[in-house]
Length: 332
Ligand code: F6P
Image: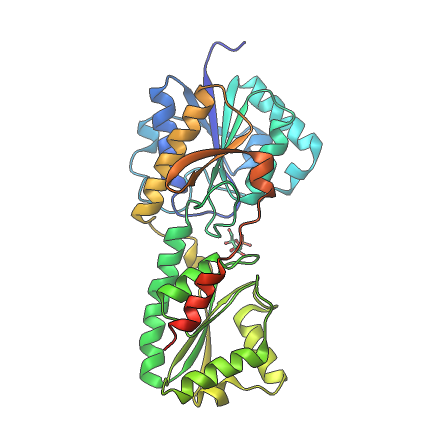
């Protein structure tokens, strides 16, 4: 039995605004509870290669408001290999770690679950992905900031669209899910939204655009989740042209594509993401201190909840059809 009560933390996968707020809260809550805290660099890469730094309360000063992760992240393919997980297990054991907190999305928590099955310390997950597609929680850290970043960009695009009477296809992130697209479509007053969860219908889109034009709307914003169609927003426009259904003709003016891309992953986290990161991290440390393991902390109806990794990873978060209908209803 190690004499030191050591807690480890890592951030992994796609970075999300609020990861630093989560690291800070894990370290501050952990040290207050008497843990010695270390952070593995670059997610599971640092865990496999045993690259870690000591983290105390001062080491996490002045990071609450910063995007990215002071520990860096990585998408580490080696972790699919049982031999790499075995190396990770022995690194944790040799360093005397009693618990590991994993901050990240689906890939990260899948790795966490696999690691838990070979290690007898506690693995606790904290959901952090701008996509907001992880089960076991209503909200993931980074989603709110990403939506606000995309929304600000759409507001600016709207100024230009209105002024030149143009149609814009604005591509937002979301390879497999449309949560960002749906929220920013409602919040940005988009005329239409295309999601990976809803099969693309060329004629239906042309009808929406033409209907808007006939009702006197001279500009149009269509929000496209990157995974809604192969090639994203550009792919949609090309497909419409290839089928002879011109959006430009339906709109009566020019069409432009704007891809927002990775600006959605960076920047200072919003207050909602800072509060969420702080609450979830304190709950994760608490769960580890109480001897619980093999679970993801989350929020459900504003309260903290805990869900076993297996159940959280099985859950498929669905798009709310009433929210989807709102876009159409409010298009005016
Ligand atoms: O982290 C989620 C996400 O932002 C997705 O929405 C997007 O498809 C993907 O990451 C892009 O990741 P990367 O730039 O690392 O390939």
